[in-house]
Amino acid sequence: MQASGKGELTMISSKGSGKEPWKGHPRGYVWIAVLIILASLATTGAVSAATPITGPITITVPGEYYLANNIINSTAGIIIAVPNVVLDGKGKIIDGVDKSGTYGIRVFNSAMTLFNVVIKNVVITDWNDGIWMSDTKNSQINKVTSGSNLFSGIALQNSMRNTISNCVLNDNVAVGIVLYEKSNSNTLTGNTASGNGMDGIRIRYSNNNDIVNNKLLNNKGPGINFDEAGNYNTVTGNTITGNKGDAIILSGSSDNIITKNTVKLNGGNGIKVIGESFNNEITGNTVMNNTNNGVLLINTANYNMVVGNTFDKNSDSGIRIVRSGSNTVSGNYVRNNLKEGLYMWDTGTVSNVIVNNYFYNNNNAGIYTPIGSNKFNLPQSAQKSITGGANSGGNSWGQPNGQGFSQITPATNGICDKPYSLATNNVDNLPLKWASK
Image 1 (tube, rainbow, N blue to C red):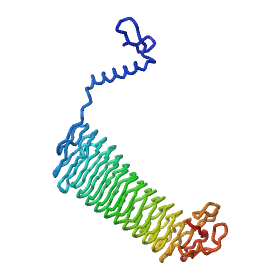
Image 2: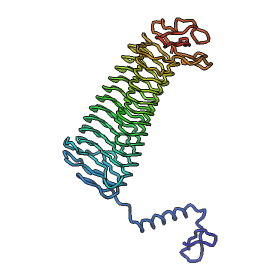
Image 3: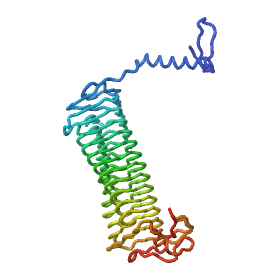
Image 4: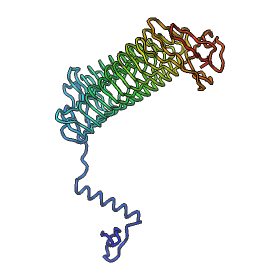
């Protein structure tokens, strides 16, 4: 084969005289590909097969590994101490002896940051932590079952841009998944955390994580717990059901987005925002049948937005605000909650804005002293309201017995003809005419 004068690849025929141009001939391109592959193999050698693992090991050479057999009742697990490792469990088990300080799989090297580590298709039981990943980035944990461990199913410490997906974290003594100490920009998706002794997912001092489409079921504490300084995280599309504690807690955590989650039948509050948690957005969630409140803002939970949610049939209040101000509560459906639709107490001198909500409860509002001056309406505008009226202003106040203020008060152009006083300095001046929703 040689190059023609025009830059085309040609083949010298076996007869030594004719030339066959390769350009434009599909079979010629196939031969080019074959020759390139053969040349590559001649230079680098054939691709090596994955290395089998039959017992506890420290992996110090990059490459592909697989678990050849179960490891049962072991006091040591597998340590990954180099980057660029794929560990395929092949569905096998790595089982410990419930000893403190042990790890089924440990990803860590004190001398370097590890990266591009993949752990998949393995069952891990009876360690302190099923998988512990520290100072690791751009890595994956996929289709792992990690349960019955003394602390966590999976723990990330100071680890960034990793993905935990399609894992099952069940019956761990403390938490299913924990991210702590600057474990930032990770993605948790498609996981199920159930029956854990405390939290389904816990986030501490970690930011910019995405928690998407997970199931947090029947844990003995919260479903998702931002228990300190978890900021700029997004929680979306999760199903959080049957947990003994609050479904979602934001404690000392700010600038998070909590959206489009299904929150039902939990033993505490649906969503709890507490203790200097600022600028969180709680939008588009369905929060129903929880033992306490649909959403609770308490103890300087300020400057948060509660917008476009459904808070139905919770055993306490739909929305409860205590010692917190400058929050915006708008566009929510708050229906058939057992005590009050809206509870407010000691909201201070900075007002909350509560407008364009649909209240439909036996007792729509409990406004208790000491109470600040909160705003229950904006200036009337020609914008469609939550009840479908042509004008917006305040809120709709209906009751199942048909005697709610917005049901019995005459209205003009979708706005009731007189204001609704909830408490001193807490008046809805433009209540909406009621409509069934």
